[in-house]
Structures are given as C-alpha cells and as structure tokens.
Length: 266
Image (cartoon, rainbow, N blue to C red):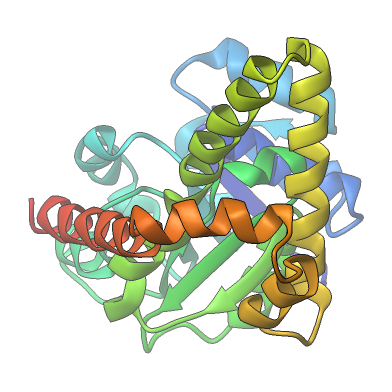
C-alpha cells in the first residue's frame, strides 16, 4: 500500500480490529494511523498497542486521506456535524451498520468519496469477510481493500446488495455459533465433557470452513464425500431433511435481509 494516512474515529471493537490488522499485517505503520474516540482512554490504549497516533477530532479529519468511521450508527448524525467543515477530499469509509452512502453525502450536503463497508465478527480473529460498496466519487477502492485485508478477505459489491450481505455474512457468524451450541450440547448429552465437546466442534467447523473456502468442490459434492450410503452421516442428514433445515435457514436469512432493509430505511 502506498504511504497513506488512515484516520479511525471510534476505537471500539471494530475500529481496534482494523487498526491492529493493518499494523500486524504490515499494511501501514502505526505512525500512519490516527485515532480518536469519545472515550479518550480507548484511543490512548489503542495508540499504545499499535503505535498509532491519538489526535483531536478536527486534526484527525484534516490529517487523514482515508477516514474510517466506526462509531455507533446512532452517534453518526452528531459526529457528521462536528467534522463536516473539515472534510475536503478525504475518502470516507463507513463501517456503521444501516448507514447508507446517501445518508453520508446527504448529511454533508455535497458529493464526496464514500465507501460503505460490512465486515463481520471474524475480524477479531483476522478472518472477516468484508464487503465494500463505493460511490462514483471513489478513485481509491484498491487502497480501501488493502485497509480491510488486515482483518480478512474483501469483496466489492453494489450497494443494493448490502442488505443481502448483512443477512448472509454480517449476521452469519451467529448462525454458525447457534449450530455450534447445538452440536456441543449434543456431544455433552452423548457423554463427552464440555471442554472436549467444544474443542471437537470448534475444530470441525474451522477445518470444514477452510475446506469449503479452498476446495473446488461444491457444498453438495463435499457432503457426498463425507456421507456414505447407509452410514452415520446419512442418518444425521435424514433428520435435517425431515425437519426442512435447508428451508429454515433460507427463511431465516430472508427475514434478516428484510429487517436490514427496514433498518436502512429508518
């Protein structure tokens, strides 16, 4: 990545993950990352951890080429009023759920380069799937992808697909945790202790996800490689089919997408 300055407003979980990821993966040096949070202690702690530079809000905005806004969506309106006068040619990168590009440009009253990003909780492990959408003013999408590559993989999509992304990937870790909880409990009911059951399930899901990501086989083909005729896997899958688990998952994700659309509309 070229020598750039990235300002991060909001040093909570996601802002912290982004800053750490950039430094740990050598994308930027800490001195090129400016930090600000309403809780000054959070910004100071993150600066100490990453080598970032804690800055007063106006100075951060004026000194940044890329401005990552990672505050709570309900705090966005007041923040935008505070920084509007300092925004000139910076690329604004929003990781605020439900905030559309038009909300930002409309709040500013002018067109500026804006990127809307949707990482997920796996960012805390450096394994996020982050989707980004850019308006027509953005000329540095590659640099934005570099920023988010510090926390995992990055995909560019049209903003009209962001509600689907939210439902599938943004909320997705919770679906896997739900499945993991059920599997762990089943293991314990089968006689395993809690620690052993959790380790078995966690590594099984982790390894299977890696295989799904890297293999050329489709999910159906991978299932076929595990499930032999008349075997244990086939017996388990028959219960899933009887309960229409596939249909339940599809309806759940459709419901999440609908709720994301409602929240985006305010």
